[in-house]
Image 1 (cartoon, rainbow over the protein chains, first blue to last red):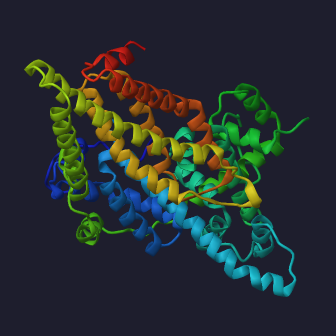
Image 2: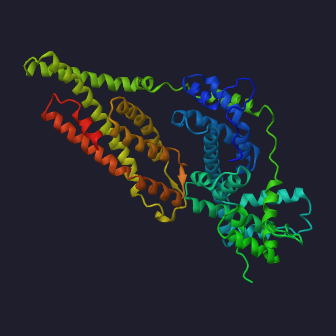
Image 3: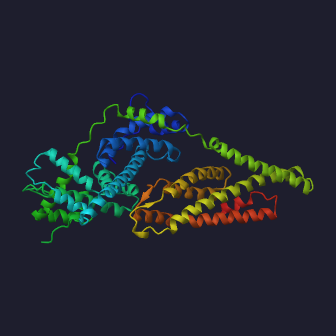
Length: 218
Length: 264
């Protein structure tokens, strides 16, 4: 996995490994946990931001992940990587938050739909329908905004899967563990996420004429 | 020419080895599929273009400042945890029972020799532990049975709330660790091994999200079933009951039960 850094790599000062910091924390040395927090906060934040899509939620996920990790530190198997472990706790918490948010959103939206007698639509077609013309989406800022909007239409599991797979280079087994599914289902979830994103960007991301694929010759 | 399907193109892009050469050959020939692959690449390029706001150099220190006041007191080691108020009360009650049993024995039975007294004390300790472990296994079995017997797709629910089972599993994990350590120190490897497996399953439940989809729920059930932990827990409970019955009819028994279990 690309995101994991060597456990000796350090936030300022104290050059102790993750394993030693965990051991000292368990022995009651609270400051040792500070080393782990300072060392791993940045990339847990990146994961959290990509999963939640906003800074406030991301910061909450980071704090909650480290609090939970502290509470469960005795359950942490010493042979695993602390970074991987706290990353997984953060992913689990973020996916719970996303689900909670989705269900709150749908509760808010449902009465309106029923009142207006609108048929239930799938998120994918919503993205397609709401898509502005290619002219309007000319710049990269618009592309980013469009992608952000498309990411919001993914289910929590799909979003988690694409974030872990694409940005953090996680293996399918690790994604499956966070999604609590088997590897084949996790693979499908990544694929579904990509397909939805692709469909959402379709009007914008037209292929360039002479695109050349990997493994092909000119 | 038959074009590659989206999932075949995606698998190719993901680096899947299956049919890789054939796909590469097809892509050389087929412009449409190359364009499809290029569209796929556009998605990943667009993802890469999404910025993540810089949290700042001092972000780690800020997180620490925010969470430090909320951190619970450092957890004591297992033996310190054992002597919490509630457990001390329980231990006191057990000690009172042991003392009462001791005096009752003194007045109803002839005075035993010194060797027999030592054996009896060991036997009482083991009996107390057997009862406690038996209760713990009973509680764990109940959680696992509830999870195993539930029907996830009931009433068309999209999410299943397992927070109650999760909390129970969380508290059982801690107890389980104590008993496992005790079993290991006492040389009861078979018991330690079963408790070790039970701990993994309990942790699995404790670390699951509070709400799971029916598919995730089925996956938890599958993991419980695959490990055969329910059967193992039942077997050990039965052994403990048998051992307890045996002790009642044979008070000064030694640690033969442990040796028997280790043979399995």
